[in-house]
Image (tube, rainbow, N blue to C red; front, side, top):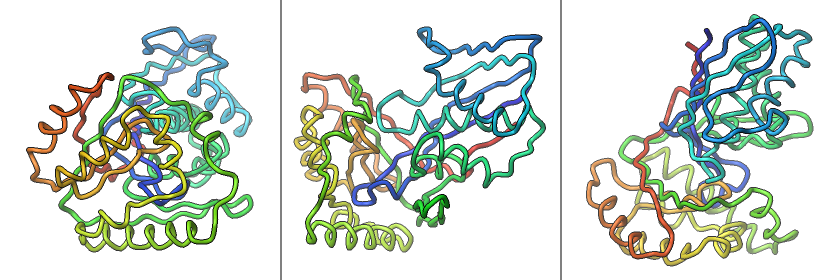
Length: 293
C-alpha cells in the first residue's frame, strides 16, 4: 500500500496571475495498491468515467513516460479539496496520479521530473508547484523549462476561505479575460506583485491591502460570481489584512492575523443573508507539499 497526501492550493493571490501559488492545509489523500488486473478508483460521491478522471489519466501518462505499468491498480481516494472552487483540486489529483504511478513503478522519476510531467498535464505550474513543494512558490515557463522559487512567508497570518455552493469552470473563467492589456495595467500588476512578495516575506502585512490590487483577471471573473464585489468590500470594511479571488474562483480568500477570532463569525453572519450558501474554512499554509507514506 502506497499512501500519498497532496495539499490544496490558492493561485494568483491577487496580482500574481498565473505566477504565484501557495499550499494550504487541506488535503486529498490517495492509497495505491497493485491488484491482479484492471484499474479501480474509489472514493468519489458519484461515478466518474476513467477517461474523465484526472487521477487515472495522469497515472496512465506517467506509466507511458516511464515505460512500464503493473497488471492492475486500485486507488482509494479521500477527497477533501472542493472541486472546481479555485482551491487546486485538479492539481492535487494530477500529482496524486503521477506520484502514485511513479511509486508503483519503483520511483524512477525524480521530484523535478515529476514536477515537469505534472505541469505538462496541467498546462501551467502555478498550482502544481506549491502542491508539490509546499509553501509560497513563484513559477514561470521558459520555453520547455519551468523555473520556480519558494518564498518564505513571515509568521503571523492565516487564511479564511469563503467557498460558495456553486462552481466556476476554469474554461469559462478564461474566456472572459481580455486578449490584450494596456501599458498602465501591466505596470499596476508588476508593482503590486513586487510589493506583495516583499510584504509577505518581511511581515509588513499592513501593505497587503495595497499589494493585492489586480486589474488583469479579478474585475472580469468577479462578474461571474454573484455578490463578489460586495463581499470583497465587506471584508475590507471588517478589517481583513487582504482579500482576493482564489485561483479562477469562485472561492474568495481572506488573509487575517493569526489570533483573529472575530472575522470568521462576522463574515459568516453577512454571508447568511445572501442567496447562495457559503462555507467558511480556516486554513494555514502547508510547508510540506506532497508527502509519501
